[in-house]
Image 1 (spheres, rainbow, N blue to C red):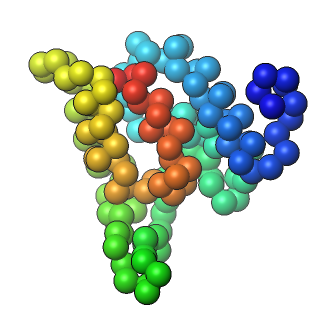
Image 2 (cartoon, rainbow, N blue to C red; image 1 turned 45 degrees about the vertical axis):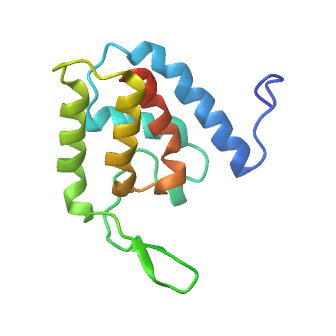
Length: 139
């Protein structure tokens, strides 16, 4: 699809196309400091046009009704309260933008994954992956 220029047909193909759009933006953003607004912009680029009602590109979640449960219904993870997301994300951005000591980009990306995965902004864990992957180029 990407090689031939064919339009995406399925939600999965739209996600692949969104990933390609997102990765094309990264070289233009390497000098930019990471901010919550930029993260939202990247999410809008990567997830826009897939299923906007489901993924709400560029938006933080506003409710606390997200849980990850096992097959028996036991909650194994519940992200932080939605009201805390902007502040938590701001702290992550401050850390990523700091230049105190050298941390290898791969290590930064791993730490970022650990810090951000529990947040579940609005787009879920899996659909946030395109935004997360772009950080390896920004870090």
